[in-house]
Length: 218
Image 1 (tube, rainbow, N blue to C red):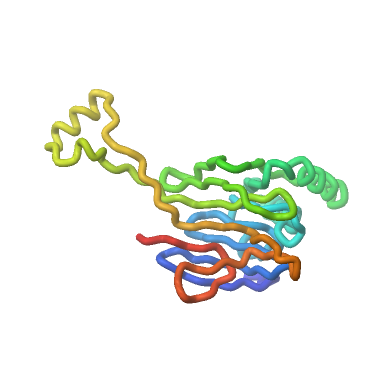
Image 2 (image 1 turned 45 degrees about the vertical axis):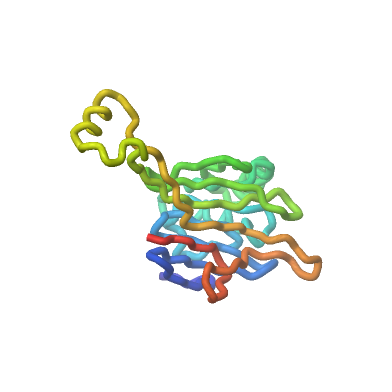
């Protein structure tokens, strides 16, 4: 495997968090088990197989490598990636890709999707991502990855299984959706004016970690 960029790695509660972040330089993270990445300030070769990326904002250290990532996947005959960005920057990102298409003389094909506060993206039957507003000098969003499960409604708990089955077969909804947050990615924190902000956050423990926060409990 080509090692073209630094990649740190941490395993926490069954999730592997890989990537690197340095203010005003580059930020890029991925979680292989969830098949997603956050930000593309750089494009490590090992990230190329991750098809879904959530970008927090439009500063170069968080999205400069989008053309590289898109072009490499095309070169390796992979499916076009799906890249989520703040809704306000979609048009300008498309312009950048079109400009690089002319320079590179190769198609820059990707599913570029704008998101705003409150939007929801379904990753799979088990996982969903929601976007929330963050405070920065440019339009920005953060993301929460949820583990969703079906749980028997409280009023039906204790009933015999055959009664629950009969209600379900009759068309009654017998379960509620329960969501548990497993990862939160802020992407940026408000600047103090002394230095550029970065995607550094603190894990929910005594250990400092410059990357997404994992709150997985199962």
